[in-house]
Image 1: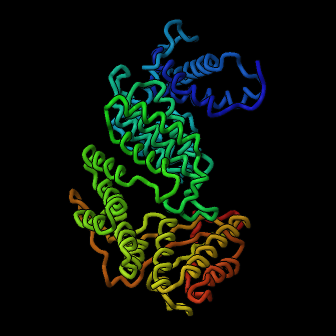
Image 2: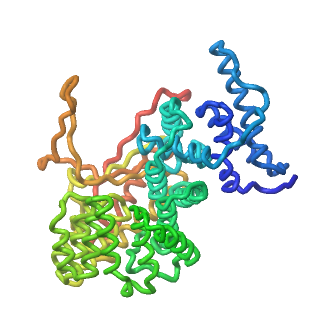
Image 3: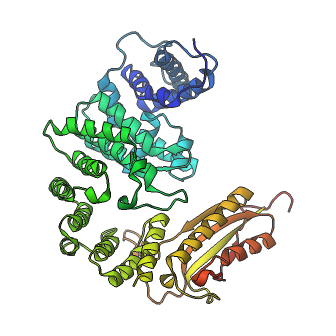
Length: 384
Length: 135
């Protein structure tokens, strides 16, 4: 037995395996998830005083007992026969496939993306409902309802059916994109879950997503100033980039690309890697970046990708080429006006750019973005 | 303690004293304004009077029911809309006087020429959920 503070991230690493074991032994997912969550809370309370030699075994036993209690009270209420035994039955514990099934279930296609995100953070990530609610700035009771509705929605899904890895990846992508607000760092959480997933699967796109997360996360220290204002990529202090994360991300990406089964996350990661590779903004290999955007357009046919491609074309072939690429797109696209402002600025058309930056500020989707665009407009006007 | 809402209007409020649109400000003036707003919110957080603040996008639409079984009707944005909310701050303070004092400070955020805007903010009190024991 050891004592000392509990490493919560490592503790939470055990969660999907523990939950998978309970479900594997016949527990229903919704009740098992509640039981695991309560075992987790007990672990955080008791382990600092007395840490078990076999943490995972302790969690399984504690969660199983709690599951029995929950089932019994349920049974008493509904006057049903108890189906469960007191102690965990002997037999197989969970396998890697079972853990993967937990991921599939929490990102099941029948769930809306916000529900899949909430359920994944709780049942796979082991976060409390309160932490998830704080991270998404909604009341705890709202988040509790969202999670219990999601659990009900997947309660009839058979555990042995193959799942869809793409919805799992999309769910983790959404978690990562949310960044951080409150005391939970969702980007770090998404990385932790993607690592765990990569350890359980042998899939190029899982590797691609993990690499993409690492390469983006590496730039985070340089992306905002102390006052919260945004720093564009070209102006970021590259000395602040996390070289360890970049090296890890590039290594994972190269191994994935070598298997020659390209997907959208690998292509996005390749673009991030090319940015990470440039010692200065001027050294960026925009020609190669445009080639990767061409791959991404082929893979996704997404208008947002085409918009980003137009900006990259502006860097590779000159602002007029970028504006020509932009002209083929729908002006209602998010950030279309901001991209047009940037390309006109690069073309030396400062008065047009100033007007467009001000218009883009009015369409901004965040306060930080709005402030940034307002300042760009003011700076250009000052130099006219 | 009582909660008050400070409403900032894009349009519809009486004209500010320093009534120059942000689209005419210099970068330093924009920066100073942003800084003032951040500092103000931070100070209220530290004094325990801050509840929430939100900024709204200028585009919006009017929506109403069109009867059972039909999708709602949306319309707008209406060019003739006289009033347009830009955002709000909610404070939880001891008195109406304190709310007015804070709204006054918020209104003095710097604008063109680094001088206070003196814009008009609308101060509204929240109705409470039920009569209090002390009422």
